[in-house]
Length: 150
Image (cartoon, rainbow, N blue to C red; front, side, top):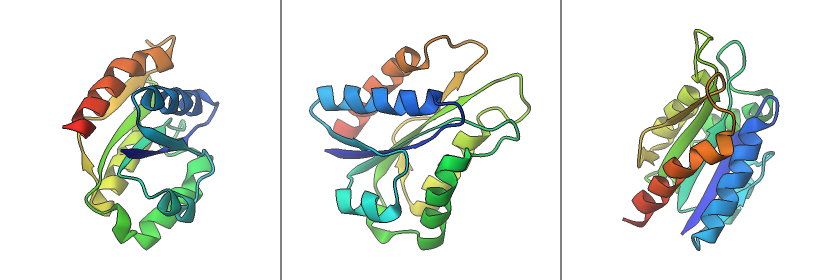
């Protein structure tokens, strides 16, 4: 199984979670690939069999600037090679904001447009409750791996 991990981060927490996810997946004998500046061409060259998006949310409920070029390219091209793949989204946000985990919701919408089916519901990591988002993502990631294998 080959999993491409896409990440968008404002202050680095989502990128840390994405790197942690990459290491956890590799320990489960999954070929995981993460590049925080990935292009569609790089993703397609990796030939993923599943996608995982890990993204934080800006104060305005949007995706972080560093993932916007990839998001726009995916939305414009809608690569057929990604259609039908399994996937999942981990969203980091702060529930004290009105648009809590809005970046994650945008990635879910994009995945739906791409024809990627969620193998489990989006994980929401709340900055007002989470001290260690990497550790808090581990149970969800374990279920994600199980879902990919079944």
